Length: 444
Picture 1 (cartoon, rainbow, N blue to C red):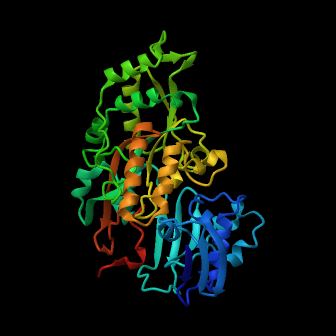
Picture 2: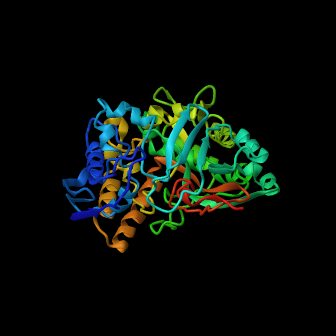
Picture 3: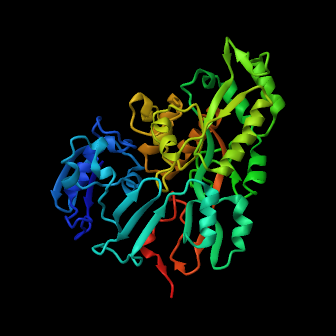
């Protein structure tokens, strides 16, 4: 499959250097460099004969048809060749801490653990931006985050949103617009299948049916999210609505573990062949809502003879190598599995995407399934929507059966905005609603 790409004219990097096809070629070549720790290589690895035709035009061919590639390209960050080619080690570049882009806002500073400041890019090639400055504050404690929103120190809460336990209070705040908006994130318990205990399908299934999902949704999240059995959001055209519905049944979970040879020990914790059925669960420290959910699950699983220890970590530690290199045991995590609107989940489920085994991707559960690999390939190798849908429907059946992730719910993020700050447009196909920040403005 041949590709010809035409870039916009007169686009410049934030340092004034023209943005050209050489930057695109350099970026794709870098992603495909096995020495570079690319977050995602799927799709790009099929590129062949990448050629710069002119400063604003490139051609290449894909080794085989790959339907998700337009979405992958739209999510691929192009880096400036004139800066990155000088780096001795692109994995430890100064660019990572002082990035230069082409977007509506340019980098000013980062104060670790506190904030990032961005300023309007006067040379931006589209309309806007209309704000002079954006300050992204780093506040891991969600109660502190909400307090700063109520006092006016924060103008907009996105990404994590306002926690459900503060929703009613937030709706009554003067000069604030508060509303729930759907998100494509799925809240899960990720299981590291590299651990022997999780290689037993009976353990994964028993843990799942012993989860009181509805109590988590109703008592901790105040009924805002919707229960999920899939890694895809309900808004996706490839979402399979016919997956088996989880039913909370601790007695059945006990019977399942008994039948699989996991017998209660002297302290009530199950054992098999000298191995105790216990593990650590981690998530971001300071997320009090997740911590409540962890405590509920801890009791759920203790009731069936499984011991879960909670060990939460700062975000930089949690989502660094601990997560990416599969050093965790289990994790409570919200994941956006898609690539934009495309349901391709190669990055999370392909056996070639296991970072801990040298793959380029985020298959941190170390899930390996020949059937899923085949279906991912089928879904990506045709542009026929019906054939793609059939492949992804079947794939969801496998992930629901194999349970590398124990799905809990699809998020509904409670967005909070100070009145007068205008231009926000919810978009379920993005990870957070800053996607159109160039159109934001303060209404007079």
